[in-house]
Amino acid sequence: MALTTTQRPARHSVRVPQGSGRGVRREGRAGYVFLSPWLLGFGAFTLLPMLGSLVLSFTDYDILSDFSELHFIGLDNYRRMFTADPAFWHSVTVTVLFGIISVPLKLAAAFAVALLLNRGMRGVGFFRGLFYLPSLLGGSVALGFVWYSMFNRDGSFNQLLGLFGVHGPGWVNDPDWALGTLILLAVWQFGAPMVIFLAGLKQVPVELYEAASVDGAGAWRKFWSVTMPMMSPVIFFNLVLETIHGFQGFTGAFVISGGTGGPVDSTLMYTLYLYVKAFTDYEMGYASALAWVFLAAIGLLTVVLFSTGRFWVHYSDGGDE
Amino acid sequence: MGRMTGLAKRSLRLVVILALLAIILYPLAWLLGSSFKSQEEVLSNASVWPEHWTPGNYPQGWTHFKSAAVTFGRFFLNSTLVALLVVVGNAASCLLAAYAFARLRFRGRRMFFAIMIGTLLLPGHVLIVPQFILFKQLGLVGGEFPYLPLVVPHFLATEAFFVFLMVQFMRSIPRELDEAAKIDGCSPFGVFRNVILPLSRPALVTTAIFSFIWTWNDFFRQLVYVSETTKNTVPVALRAFIDSSGQVTVGPMFAMSVLSLVPVFLFFLAFQRMLVEGINTSGLKG
Image 1 (cartoon, one colour):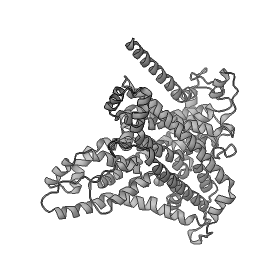
Image 2 (cartoon, each protein chain N blue to C red):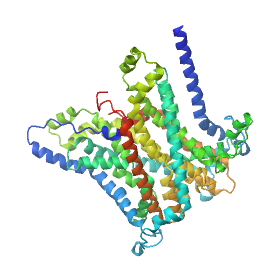
Image 3 (tube, chains in turn blue, red):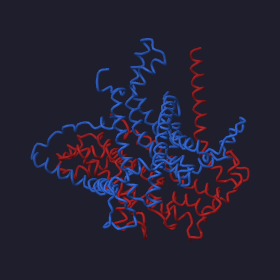
Image 4 (cartoon, rainbow over the protein chains, first blue to last red):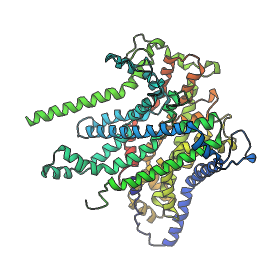
């Protein structure tokens, strides 16, 4: 709910005394004028493509043939997906696994480091910036290369393990471990949610901690009884954002696997599979069906997140306690 | 005694933070170091510091695509052009939309706002296939200027994140200023020009920086729309490094990787505070 609670009902403004009726009408017209780029963009680049891809998902359209010879095949694409395409299920498994492991780890790291930095010491801004840096760079092709090289058989990670007498596998080339390196790449970019956590921590009223101290609460108790409930809206906000972004680790998967999702489909993220189907195999109809299933899954997930949020997210402006 | 433990606690915290930073920043330092390592050393030397300095990686990487008669300089120009166009498009169109959402009353505003928030949660990957088909039908894929599909949507406020960021920002501008301008005879357009536009500078700067960095790093879209070598943007060219040479030339590849990150890093140094605040204004507050 974090996104929508920020939308306050329009504060009523003081009407300009003369000609207010005309003013309102003029404001209405101006509203559409200012909104027209967005309206056009939404219509042309969001709504139209969405509807178009819904139609295409019932065809076997490839990019090469003409639109006039669209060939409708009913639900075949969806049937094929769910019953006759092991790669689809594989990519679902990989993506869910990736999301379920990387999102909580990333948020935990972000929260822990935010707590560590939130002690009013000197240089917080500097440290915060450095922790944030991976979030800016991590999605690039360059970092994909770095990950690939560090987690190679002879890469620096194995050399580090070698110091402890452990012989690591070629992580990125091992079907059992390749996804793990992608998860690590995602968790490494915990800086963005951390920044949001830090800002949230600053808004927890000091009086609450003081009151808890007076009541004899220790640090542990204060954390669970003050920090956690007060931070729950921020945790929720980060959870929603990261969950939705969590399904989009495309670049890393693409670079590490050379665009194939390998080894043995172990890094075949759903978005990568979508890309392969659409732009390598040119199965645009099937890819459209994949996209709609993805959309439905994300929508469902958002609904689930928001409905569970009701039970654990505490809004201090929603009630007295 | 109490003060001593306080000091000890603080030092311990500092040590933990520095240790964490060392781990977090190691991959970046290693990349920088490796860009100066020789071919054999890159894959065998975990240390950040190169044993045999090989600055030749840089000129070698720069001219890696000489068979296509281009240097990396061309790719940097291409990327810069795309990023700057996206910056202009996002800043202008999102500001207009945000003004409508934040300040003007018109029929359907709440509904449109809800839709806009909805698109915030819409993964771009879902739209890539139909958008590609759309641009293909319009004849905008490939050709002399293959960047239109990357740029045009941004001139129509499709990046909801920035609309939202600016709406949040504008809500912090006192309404009294609007009202005063209206009493002075300003139309909604006048209010926009004389009040909102000048006061929205910080939000515009934040939008510009994020737009630039995200576009610079964006791989997915550019991979789809850019195919000809001379039209390559930096991320697409980097990936082509692996494909073009049978044996991967790792040193030069890392050298160009470092260069590809330099603009983002410079933005980070110059605007660190603004980036961090940008995340916050769009994020919570409420």
